[in-house]
Length: 448
Image (tube, rainbow, N blue to C red; front, side, top):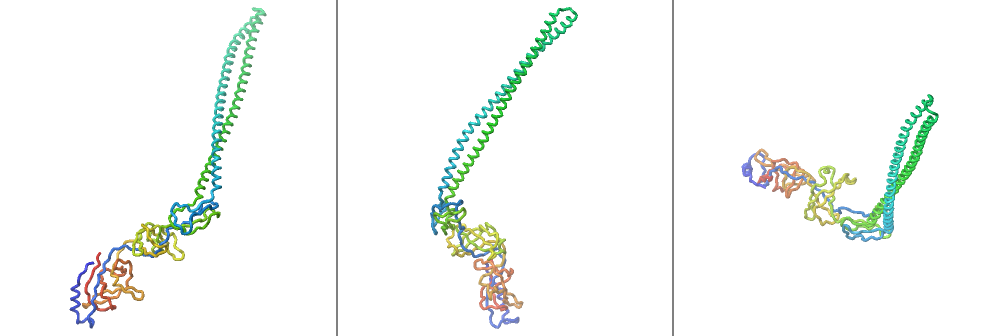
């Protein structure tokens, strides 16, 4: 703070004593004043909150069963990962063993079916090769007969021409009947040979086609056998997959049959005992975490000013701790119409659960006039200060002004309604009243 004496103002007051203008009969009281000036400051939301456990966890099994053992009692301290209770796992073990046997059987079956399928596929390949070979044989038969028949046809054409010439010569009586009959016999012999060759070719080709047809039918049957083996193999793989899923589920159930704490804290309630049957999701042990959060209620007007991650200061038992807002309710409490806000300290605070604390949450930067707290009076719930004003006759008189108070900064407090540049009485305020003549001792100015 910078201070200065208003010598000129004091001289003026002294010169005015005993003169006109409404001077008091006795010497006016001497006061000190402070000149108001706007200062920047962080606006904060002040709340009263209470300490509570970060969370209360109700631990329950993920499956139904008979409780084998409960390893904690009410009031016990527990650590994260500590076993709280477990279920009777006899039926689960049986299911796991059955699943292992099913896997073994399925794997053996798959191995055998794979061997069968490979054998069936090999047989099918051989059948296809045999068909191809038989078709090649058929082609050779056809080619052989066609060559033989073509040769016979060429011979037949020759003997037929000889017979036709012999017939003409015989009719003209140039050759004997014997020569004619020999020519005819030669033609008939070749014609019979051609007919026999054609008939043999048809029979042999027919027989070969029939053989190929039978082989192709066998091939189709072999294809069906291969497809059946593949179908059986797919079914066996499905059974193996189902058995593996059953084993995986069984192992998971074995793990789920043990109930572990996921937090450090203490047991608040043991809901169920050993021997009782529990359903999935039914609480068995309740644990409050050892970590703390501060719970406050924020009104509708201030709700938009805060957000998750915003910093906060927590004051308790003379100490101040820093923290952050970690949770804000989406809807207000029906009874209080305030929004529940949770603040997590940066470091642990040893506060008894339910203890009250003070919380300050910065909500923005602004400016205003701060005055000494000693300048503020309160009467019937109304806050006010005294200012000094020049009455125009060389005197200073008090003026009572109501104020709305805000932030506290050390020994000063924010007076929202006071403008800059006026003088507020800071000392010598005893037995003052409105419109009273005063003498100014000194003027102090707020430091920026």
